[in-house]
Amino acid sequence: MRRTRAQVTLVILLAAIQWAGCGGMEETHSYSWWKIAFDLPLQCRGPIELGIGAVAFVYPADSEPGQAKVEITLIAVPADLQNSLDNDQDAILDFVKGTFLGTTSRADENIERTFLGNNIVGDVQNITIPRRGQMETYLIPLSDGDMVAVSVMHAAETAADHSTRVVEALAATLKEVPLK
Image (cartoon, rainbow, N blue to C red):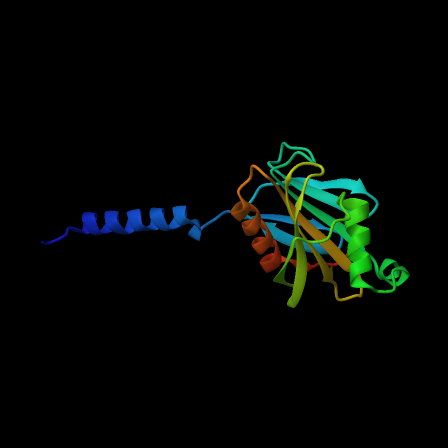
């Protein structure tokens, strides 16, 4: 069977469209706050100030913190705060979670991801406040001695793989930027 140039072109075009639809050309959105920047496969709203040294990015973009399908909370953890907590990772994590994330519960499990070239063990836990869902929280050291706490929460009705894609994108694209 002999194919015409038009048929070959059509096959190539259809293959390209199928490849694009499978995530090969997924659109990303860039975000920055404090000393970090990252890209996500979601269009979020943020940074939304949550208090001194903490912000949220919410998806969908028209949702509010505590009501979003996916919520990313970033918390500045300066070196002097770490020192006041004796540089104890558990104490720092307890402070961050209790002060900014509405929980003092221990993790249901741990997961290791790479952020800024460092393998970081994070907490994964089921939560009920501000609503039912699951949250992953990481303490990520920055080059100047400060840290940023990153928490990604997804609501119970949101598929876990949706949140996993967000965490993986954040981990893969996170970079330090000069403080503005």
